[in-house]
Length: 143
Ligand SMILES: [Zn+2]
Image (cartoon, rainbow, N blue to C red; front, side, top):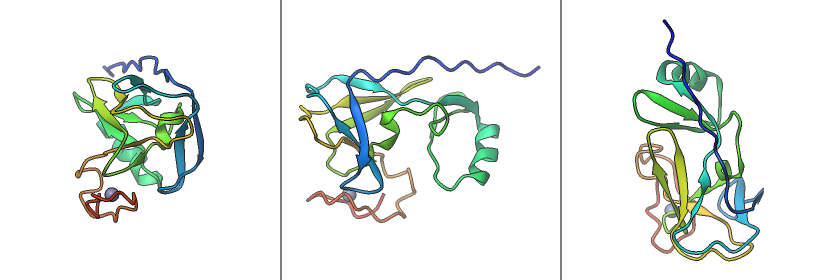
């Protein structure tokens, strides 16, 4: 019998706008000030099985998937929200916390109106092979 996978409701708690990024491609900008250490929201998407994720990865150029627990994956290309366009930065203003069935974004410090949001995607995201263009003073060079 096929196990039913439930996707919880994912919300964004602060208004964000997607427009051209200063880092790469599209970015996410704060429309209102976000205080330090606040939950910005959950990355929108659908929960799929690892098997389904492998299938989907073959057919897409831009991968927007995050591994969760229990061989489940969040596919953020389906049912997306503004958080999908938060770019990687080696000196970010927000951070990602992956729980059992969510990918949460929190502010590390106060984020000003009009500021681009960024998060550290970690070294494993692209296995350290993709050149980083974040422009931070302490940039690691690769992600
Ligand atoms: Zn960097």
